[in-house]
Length: 400
Image (cartoon, rainbow, N blue to C red):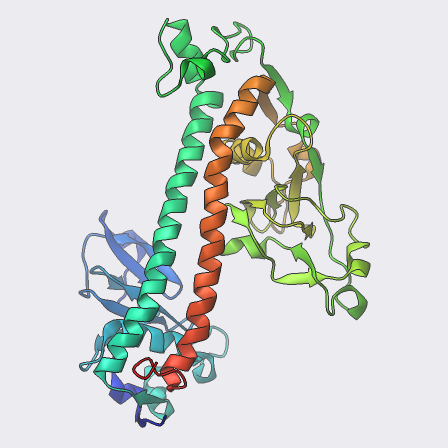
């Protein structure tokens, strides 16, 4: 199928965004759109929704579809005039274009909208535009719903951990001769009835160090100069960069794979499913449960939960103690926390009965998070496969 083509700068009108220093922003709910996403909030919008924004400086191209009034920063270009085209279709069109070839910046990547006259786009007609936008939009809407659901599930997991193991709410309720809120009698009976006067933790529980309760290991990077360690590798190998774009606290895949020969160069070897991963530098604090066996590089502290504490507990313990974890980091070039500094951090260890019930309550939450995250990967893959075929006319929905 062939279409007439039009220069992009005639197809739509792109406008540079607006300056808004952080010091000039007022508290509000209007998203401030930077070249890589939402960069903050303000109380005034410059552009009505729906809007399409691409990166102009720092990070160029990409594409963001904004469904509420917004303020595009001067590091972006936004569509001022859709010229009758479907806005969401324009978003997918922008995502399909490699704008890096139009980079005019010598140091910082920069996109000049006046240089886009040579970029030709297909005139497919408004009906096809709407059909494509609906199909791809439905996929993205489902991804967004799954992501929102996972955020809610994560908040539930955090709330349970804080109530049971930080605030000791069930114990305090029993101290006041009350039934713990939202808890059945059988579960409540497993909690102590008072706090230890010296330690402040429930009687019968113990105060320990995380290094005594989990197996703490680091990783390594096989030489990138040796193809035997990398070429045709099928063993997951992760660096903290894998977690930089992960919205859920589960890691399903890695950008790199090593071979068996490469794995032998990593002292910690292949770590099991549900190992807790904590980035130990650049930056400190990314967290995830490994949901496939994987090896790690030297940028992680990994916790194998082979003793009493379940992985979901350890993950939430890390969330709760993150401030202290970061405070223990040091370094002149970049902050890093060593295993030696990490291991002595204190952890309250409940009874095995309470831990067992806790995992029965919380593990299904992370099972659902994992399932939703896997579905999102599949939906995103389908979307990215369909996108170029739909835009080029290789796949014509009106004939299929």
